[in-house]
Image (cartoon, rainbow, N blue to C red; front, side, top):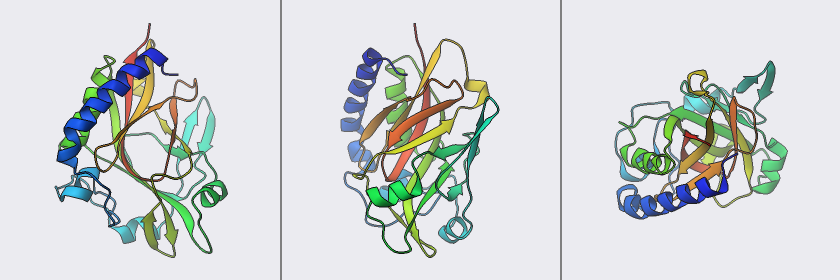
Length: 227
């Protein structure tokens, strides 16, 4: 787990960068639902993205995601379009029924997740914030994705509110980035420039488990040296 002292350093850097980057990302959330392939920045500024996945393609074919750790397979509790190639598996550990209750889903509404890769070229402002926070602890960015935690009604996707109940998720850490003497955390940049630091909630060396909420965010696994 991330150490308290290091967490405070990251939070301080994140706060400073959020103030600097807010004008570039544009404050305030959008009412329009972003299509997969749209970065946090594209959603609010109209900048180009390096990935493109249509809403119809993503919503029409629900899939599940798994992460294998020490021979044990973890399967996401929420259906979704898990499209990342950078991260070896995204798992939503919080059950669909719990999410539905926590976010007031009714009738035929079902939780749904969309995960897709982003790059520094496609999301420069978000990456600048993430890199600065990682550098504050002498760390580096491992992989980055956009994750949209939302709901489906039929084939219509919309985002859940960012202010909702906690949702526990886990990213598989790429094997090439698993190293002795390092710890891992997740940094999330939200529309409007807000930065969230998410410490690892477990001691498994192959995953980073974190607590987040609904909505859109640019998420990055970061690794940093520990004494």
